[in-house]
Amino acid sequence: MSASHDDRSAWLRRQAGGLVLAAGALLWLFETHPLDLQVAGWFYDAARGAFPHRHEWLFDTLLHHGLKSLSVAAGLGAAGLAIAGMAGLWPDWPRRNALAAALGMALIPLGTALLKHWTHRHCPWDLTPFGGFVPYTTLLQGAPDGYAPGQCFPAGHAAGGFVWMVWGVALRSWKPRLARWALAGGLTLGLLMGVARMAQGAHFLSHTLWSAWFAWAVSVGLAAVCRVELGARGAGGRAGDGPQAASLTSACS
Image 1 (cartoon, rainbow, N blue to C red):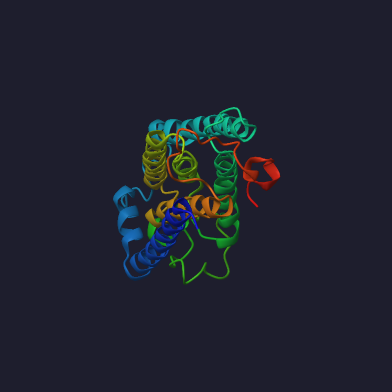
Image 2: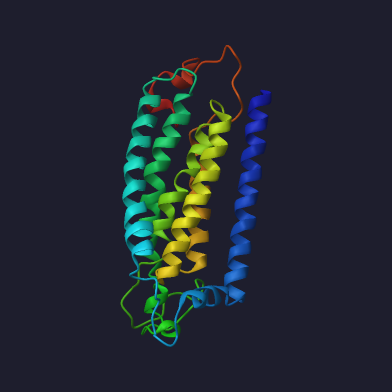
């Protein structure tokens, strides 16, 4: 067994352990403490019975619709770069890494959208503590019976920023500094987009943090399934070496 394989296996084990610990911490924090209600209360004006930032230009036009459009456009461009990498345009970028990037750009937002339909969680502005009509329940308590299902968990808007975390994995062996920037940028953008929607009453803090966790989990899962190269390549290494790069169909086999 090669040293690089050992390092990769160790990295995957660490990431899996981190995901388990983070999930446990999130469940403990938001199931046993009213943190979601407290943070949402910072943005809620009880006297007006509304979230004042909900329709403000900065939050609605710029940070919601503007950043969403920009994220979609940038995501399409990045997906195009990943597809070009899969075709071998950059020989030093492993094709299976490029495939992981392309899949992550699709699976993270798609998976988030599917979860929103399955979890049936409501937005803060729909809940009785914030002038709505639906009783508040925690995630493990489930959505209350007798109400139309909500579609607010996890945070889809924040996922448009967290999606860039997959590039922090896909670029590790080729452009490690750029990979770190992608990871930091994805976390920063996702949190910015998440907080903006929290200020509008569209999401709780837990919705945003679980979106980050999901993007992290998908990125690690793709690193495992696609056997992504994680360590810096030697001077003689090329993405086309070996049977793994013989065809795109074998890249995630």
